[in-house]
Image (tube, rainbow, N blue to C red; front, side, top):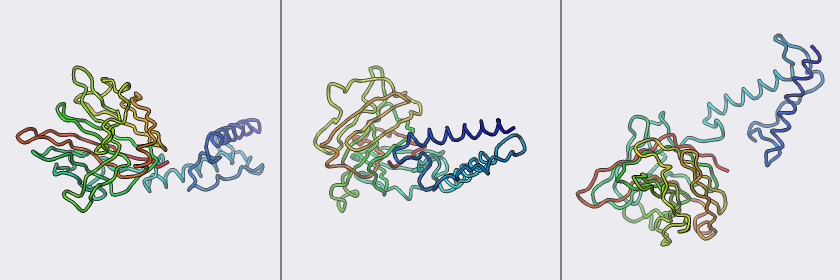
Length: 274
């Protein structure tokens, strides 16, 4: 029995130490959890089922914190911006145009409006370094995107100002592939931020299906993935100097009169600040 307890304790200490060694701040447990319980020699009392008292104490501490985090919306350190449980868009606001957004069947439905320019459903909060995840489905004839670290030009003007900054492209692949996942400089005067030599059409975006996007923004580096495939790894000091932090915006692209309507849909939007 003593040997079994020692093995269990040794395994726990190994996992804990390994976990901590990989963390930049010396511990993998979230900082708001505080310090884990110390495992003392006196904890080596056998419990029913063959477990050691120390392992039970640590497991209980981890379980309690995980439950509290889930209750407070901190599970996995990600914060939900929108999911199937969301009942309103109170933390978002529409800017730059008059396309429409509404909640339908657990997703955000963006619909074009004849004659409107590019329209964005923007977070009220600004974000700098982060890991952003979302799912998106887009009409085959509509171009879209997600703004990151973006700003508003003339916020007191028409339609709440002009959104500008880095944009992660959303575009159906079609027969020849497209530029989904590359980085564009919306209203920055620079056009594509992704270098021309890397701006190659691909078919990682699945037309007519939900596509999983990941955007990792840290310092002057922006990385993107679609359905697990890395699309872009951009380092751009110029855009970082002008847009180190800002809003996130869901774009419904502008269309001409007597065309459309076209739609784009988003769901399961979550973010982890770094």
